[in-house]
Image (cartoon, rainbow, N blue to C red; front, side):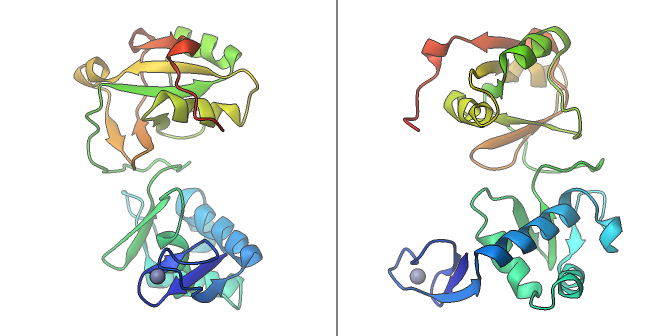
Length: 214
Ligand SMILES: [Zn+2]
């Protein structure tokens, strides 16, 4: 559900942080429906929707507004903006009347987020995946960039959704970058990287992973 506070913009809780109930923009079901369509168009199949994407992943916001309205009569450009600006994972960015996904593309595009300077990064995997990654290096099977976490417990949480016994791989990021691996900061939680050779990777002992209490 997405609501709008006249003072503070779009939000996804019952009430805005200021206490106002706000105006309903999208209910739960429509948030989900529009979210799937926008994610698909910006990350996976813009051409199928008749959207033109530039080499950095940008799409004209008004054009996307027209496309979503064609699919769902109730939808419009304002709702796309509401969806993007209230996204809890900061998946989208809007600039100069254009919109793009910040990460998660399955198409071959060249993102230009700021360079990452963190010395170490983390990747959560199942035990079998971890063994394989330590042999062949870390890369995404379906995407151009692999998604890394900025802390070990975030990586643990990510892998915990998929496997009962997550392993956290530590990436020695500084020397990897010196060796030419491009890494970019997407948001506070996520860094995207090109393929990382195995010599920069090791498994983090579970005693070194702070538990989040989830
Ligand atoms: Zn407010």
